[in-house]
Length: 112
Image 1 (tube, helix red, strand yellow):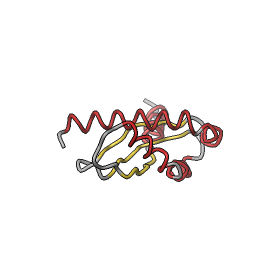
Image 2 (cartoon, rainbow, N blue to C red; image 1 turned 45 degrees about the horizontal axis):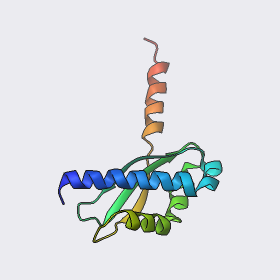
Image 3 (tube, rainbow, N blue to C red; image 1 turned 90 degrees about the vertical axis):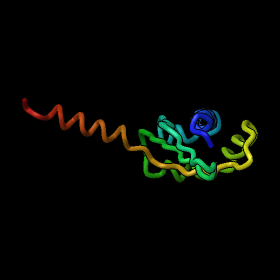
Image 4 (cartoon, rainbow, N blue to C red; image 1 turned 45 degrees about the vertical axis):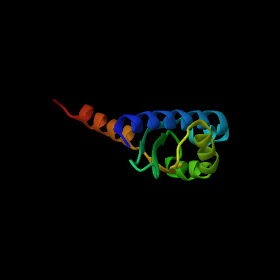
């Protein structure tokens, strides 16, 4: 599949998943705080959709909680897009925010 179409599908997928979290997972907001979908990566054969997420609280349980809603998310994905194959969704915790904060703290602690 061409890369331009993949990018469009990734943008739609990120929007769908973000809106699902916002609309359907209000109870998760209290457990995890703000949940951020920082990016998605769709495999070229449409088999897998890797979703990168982060949260302020309980990050170790976030991917498991989201995986419980996979069926509903895939159903919404299927209703909104015409694809011959619906990708399997995998959640990955994105720790880039924590890493950048750690680097920033290290730089600020240097006496120059």
